[in-house]
Image (tube, rainbow, N blue to C red; front, top):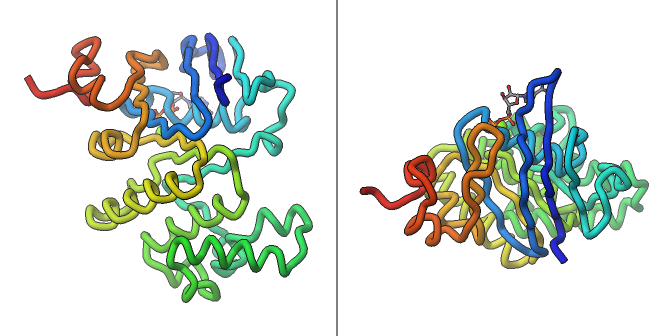
Length: 238
Ligand code: ADP
Ligand code: MG
């Protein structure tokens, strides 16, 4: 059984349909990458999966339960944004432990989880800093650390590397790939970078205008793109 099953999923905003009947199965532990041009609905799909928006048609199943029955906080999902979205007045440690403190987790337990995540991301020496005292790459690692601390079964990444320079993009990409191997969690990752998609994905989903164009392993899409649009995005140059 797929961990996430989208059947004819639709979303409209004020009568304008932006997600137009998406069919998609995502298995436990898969690394799935959504690619497509700006405005094609990538972020909206992530927000529907996270429960930050309600679907307006079709069904979305999470571990076999229809999404309407599973409130956002019970979906076992953590999201990492391009903009980091850290609390400026909190330290790195407080930012990372924030969701646990909301759940009234004992302080010693929070400290332990935060230190574990900080160690994975090489942030141990920065725990007392404020976000303003960090580089862009460090801030993004804190945002990833904050997601890890929540121990989600599904990570959603929305263009997490877009604000980083080329060297940092590559380094952080490698870290995310390692994280996926180590945590064995499901990851859904939005990017418009072909190299990121090709290197990270078990499965790529190509979107255009709220419609899935093709779903497949990177090499499958690269060798056999189903149309010129997919070829333009990830197909082999002709
Ligand atoms: P992407 O992430 O692929 O760039 P989005 O999912 O952000 O695309 O947006 C898809 C379409 O939905 C765009 O046309 C966008 O303007 C529209 N859209 C997204 N969120 C809203 C909203 N809250 N209200 C109205 N329109 C929205
Ligand atoms: Mg987006």
